[in-house]
Image 1 (spheres, rainbow over the protein chains, first blue to last red):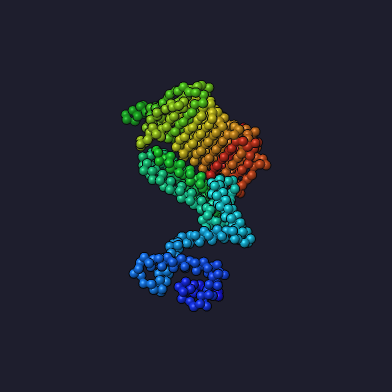
Image 2 (image 1 turned 30 degrees about the horizontal axis):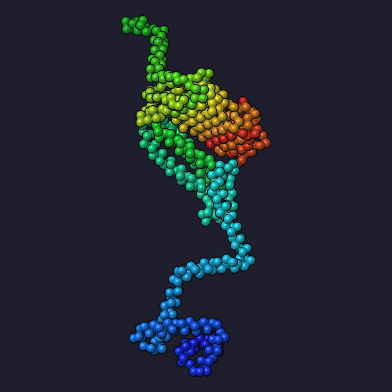
Length: 248
Length: 258
């Protein structure tokens, strides 16, 4: 007799419903098989428990089918109680998988992991250095800056700010400040005398011309770092001029 | 009869004399009006050797001269409508701010300052329009800033930090470059001339993007590099302990041996 056949007949065996031969076969198998013996023992305990229960609740009919249904219900209830909630199962599975998998990587997986970590570390280091030294680069003495393909890619995906993007951002900030001081100047200039008004207009025209020239150069050659730097200086001078005259 | 009278009363010589007399009278009257229109302001303050002078003018010239006295002497000519001047002596420094003192006034005339300070004073002057001049000063720093138009002339300067900035106008610096000093000259349109000793040690960044006219003169050496098609010169002389930054957007930069 194999285990499967034995487990099918255990309940009938415990209820003395098997014929002598079958009962002997089951008995023989249980004697030899520890697993089936354990199942038999468990069922026997449950059966004893249920019999006691039946004795207490005398109104329950001593029907074997009903009894087994009851046993099944009890088992199912117990199993349900033992079963954790789906999330817990998932989490436990996830952690268990991770724990098991972390120690079950092939050589190629280990190498791939190291390469991945190295790449990510390099990328993060590069981004950090790039951002840290962005202003220093603006002050560098190089006349032009040529972006590498890597930098361009990083710029496109928004990981680093390209010189052109940094310049555009800076210009927008400066223009806001200029607009503010311009409004202040417009309020004040009606009170100036002719000399101040003429001088201011002449100097503003000069600085506007400088800004225009630098913008034209940068349109043709956005990589011209020196012109970018000069444009920045000219915008600062324009801000200073407007601020200074807004106080008069 | 009429003809005789005319001839007698208005001979050509008398006519000339009359015209000359009227011209002289008109000239003196005009001068008198101008003098009467100007007010003079004078004040002196006792000062320590390393006193700080901070002056913010609106329009007009400012001349600061070092002298061998522990005293600051301020003289100013105020053109009509005369500006308010209210110098403050605070923490061993003299502070004059005509922008603040005349805030809200619609029209204020030029104020032309002549100020004497101890040789070792720190001088910080700025104006909106007008020439600035500082001479014979060797304190910790000299700063001269013109918001718009005017020349800056710094002569016989021995400060370790010097800054001169204008928008339209020339800048002239004549002085020594101290070890570990910082020197900054910036203009938008004008000429920048720097007269310094040949044995000066400094790191240089000189930029003249429009004219590309950067003349190093005797300071040219193998460590000086022209960048960006000659728009910028970067290099050093001696041990390069001082820093010298010169920017002229639309003008020239020249170095002259002192």
